[in-house]
Image 1 (cartoon, rainbow, N blue to C red):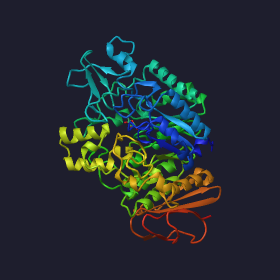
Image 2: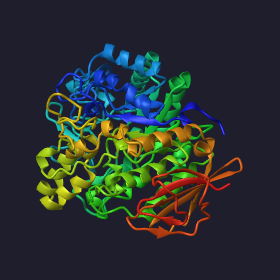
Image 3: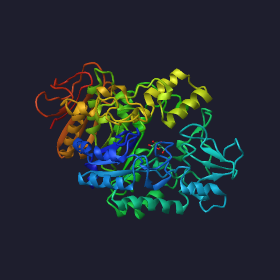
Image 4: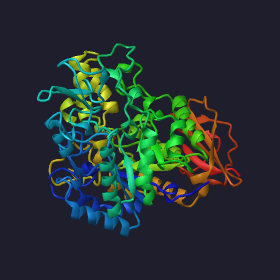
Amino acid sequence: MKQSWWQHAVVYQVYPRSFQDSDGDGIGDLAGIIQRLPYIKELGVDVIWLNPVYKSPDRDNGYDISDYRSIQPRFGDMKTFDRLLEQAHALGLHLVMDLVVNHTSDQHEWFKKSRESKDSPYRDFYFWRDGEPGIPPNNWGSYFGGSTWEYDDASKQYYLHLFAKEQPDLNWENPQVRESIWDVMRFWLDKGVDGFRMDVINFISKPEGLPDAPNPEHAAYANVEPMVADGPKLNEYFKEMNSKVLSKYDAMSVGEMPSVTAQDAVEYAGLETGELNMVFQFDHVTLAFNKDPRLGKWNDEPVNLVALKRALSKWQQALDGKAWNSLYWNNHDRARAVSRFGDDRPEFRVRSAKMLALVLHMMQGTPYIYQGEELGMTNAHFTRLEQYQDIESLEAYHQFVDVEHLVDHDTMMRYLATESRDNARTPMQWDATAKGGFTEGTPWLELNTNHDEINVDAELNDPDSVLRFYQRLIELRHNNDLIVYGNYIELDPEDDEVFAYKRQYEGRTMLVLSNFTDQTVTRDYPVPVDGGLMISNYQDDQGATLRPYEAKAFMVA
Ligand code: GLC
C-alpha cells in the first residue's frame, strides 16, 4: 500500500470563532489561536484544520466568502495569518484550510458583477434562470429552508443557492470559474498551507437542465441532495483540479461529501488513482435523521447501535487497501458526540466520551478531533430559541414550526437541543472562570454552563481526564502501524450492546471491545486477563465482563 504522511496523522479541527478570543470582542480570532498553539501541540496532533477565516458577511459563519484572498477582519489580518502559519510550522504542525467553492457570498465581487445585468461577463459564473415571481424554475429545497431559488427583481431572473440566499452557487461548467478557483488554491498553497478540507465538494456538478427532484412525500420543497450529489462532471472537475493544482504540491485534501457511496469514494480518493486523499462520508450521520424525511436531520431519537456499527464497518471494509477513511464523530455541523452517541449524564460522561474516542481512534483512517471533543464537551442544553445563533437551526425552526406547522414549538426545541450545530459551537472551555477563559468580553454564543467543571485546566491536572485519554490514543497510533494500516473485521454485527472488532497487520491482531450501555454485560471473547492490554477506560481489567461504557483494546496475538 502506498503510504503518505497524512495517513499517520491526527487532525485537530479549530472553529476560529469559538476557540480563543484575544481582543475582548467575544469572537475568537487568529491571535487567539496562536496563543493556544502550544496546547494543540501538547495534545499530540499533527494537523490543524481551520474552518473558514476569509472575509465574509458571516451569514453562515464564514461559509459565505466575499473575498478568498483576505482574512475576516474580526479574526485578524494577513500578517497575523502568516504568523499563525509560521508558528504552526515551527511546532511541526501542518495547517489545512477550508475551501468553500460550491458557492460564494452574495457580497463577492463575482456575484455583485453577475447580478448587474444579463449581459455581465460574470453572469455565467452563477446559475441564472427565467421564471415568474412565485414560481421558481424547479422544486428544489434549500438546506436552510424554502426554495433554492431567489428572484432578482432587477434582472427578472432567479439564481440558484443550495444553502442560504446569501450563498449563490458557482457554475462550475464555466471554465473561467474553474480557473479562478485554481488560482485561489494556488494562492494559499504558495503561501505554504498544507492542504484543504473541501466544503460540500461533491455538489459542484449540477445535473443537465436542472430537472425537478422526486418528491414522493409531497414536501413543500423536494430534497435536493439526490439531484446534486456526485453529479455527472464531478470526476472530470477533480481530475482537472488535481492536474492543474494539487499534483504540484505535497498537499492533503479531504472532500466533504454528503450522500457519497463507498464505491464513489474509492473512485475520488483511491490510494493509487484518486484525485483527493480522503472524503468525509455521512452514513453514520444520516442514520440519526428523522424517520419523516421532510424533517431531515431534525430528530431526538437515540441512535441504534447495530445501525451505527453497520455504517462504520461498511466504510472500514470497503476502503481497506483501496482508499483512505477519515474518522470523525464531531465537527462544527454535528451535535457533540458524547451527547449524541454516548451518555452525557454526569456519572457516565467521562467514561462514555473515552469509549467513543477509543472505538473511533482504533479504526483504520485518519482521525479528526473537533475542538472540545478531547474534553468530552457536551451539547449546550439550551432551552430558549433566543440562545441559538445558527442560521440552519433558526431557519429550520421558522420553516417547520411557523410556515409548515410540521412540528410544535416544544418538539422543535427538543430537536434543536439534540441536533443543532450550535451544540458544537459554544466557546471552547479553557478554565473555570466566568467566561471560561475564552474571552474577556461577551461571548458571541453562550458558554455551556458546565464549563466550570469541564475545561482544559481541570483536565490537564487530572491524569484520568478525557483529555489525557486522547493524548494516549494519539500516541498509540503514532507508535503502532497496526492501528494505522491494519485491516478491520467486525465481530457480532447484530450485538446491540457491544461494539467489537479486530484489526490485523503483519501477523499481529488487536481486539477492540466496547460496551455502549450503562449496564454491566459479559461477552465470550478470547480476552487475556493479564497482559496485552493497550488501553482501557477503567483502572483494572475484568476480562469478559464489560462494565458500563467500558472500552479497551488489546493484542491477542
Ligand atoms: C458545509 C459546512 C457547513 C456549511 C455548509 C454550506 O456543510 O460544513 O457548516 O453551512 O457546508 O457551506
